[in-house]
Length: 144
Image (tube, rainbow, N blue to C red; front, side, top):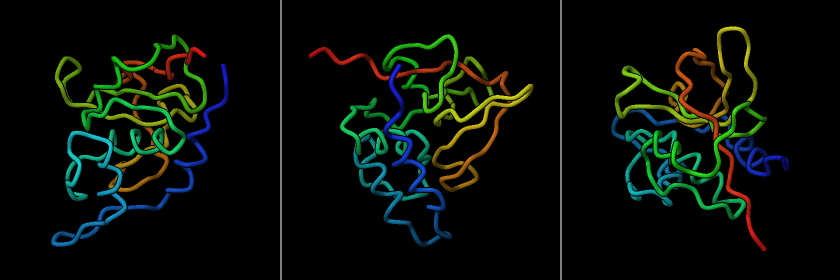
């Protein structure tokens, strides 16, 4: 499996954050460009938009959706996570529609650590219970 070229893009965005009410961070609005919520401000959920944007910077097409769980149908599934793979998490109800998505960094006994957008309202590393992982995804192999 190849390395994840989108990770250098994502790491360069660390620190981008939402602005206070009444303002909007134009960088977050830019993340929405390649999704079905293009033009929305930084008050809309933006974890999936960040993943779509990061991949687009290295010419990989994402889901085009702002829904985190849209990544469950994208690319190829992985049984074991690899650095930079996309991790899809449930939020609240495991069978519901809400979720979160980020790039895999590492896992420990209880948590999966991700680099992602809209993690405590910014691009940063954060951790989530391993019990919330719905899947690990990698871009489909390109045929030449």
